[in-house]
Image (cartoon, rainbow, N blue to C red):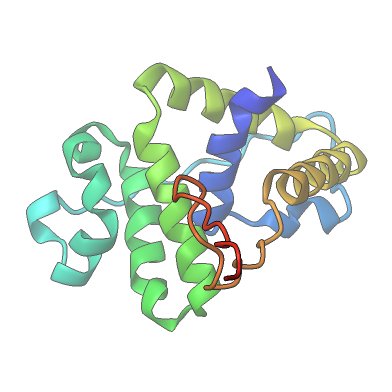
Length: 167
């Protein structure tokens, strides 16, 4: 079950959601405080309104673009705008996360969002624990690069040369 939320967690971090939120101390609120009025999300651009650079990065999401929430589309546009200024390894991470998110079914995405909301409701210590587990998972999942075999090694299906007897 824990592996099911990883792709969504990856994308949410890639979208610029604060991964350092677990490092902030918990704020205490009075028990009878009024809930904050949430601002309506600005209308997100339609696919046709995106720049060519944004379309190139977000191309895998084009089929789902109309069904994405304004909030998610706005976040994706922000990421696409920051993308050219990112380091190459950060760019690769963003591309991978967008690909993974695009491959999820709508049900998987919704389940991932719900798990993310549940994680955010946890105390900061629990959030840190989840983040550490995720980092450990990532390091185990990514194999170390293997050295290339020397160019002189024949392919395994090639016939093995035999030495002819000396005359």
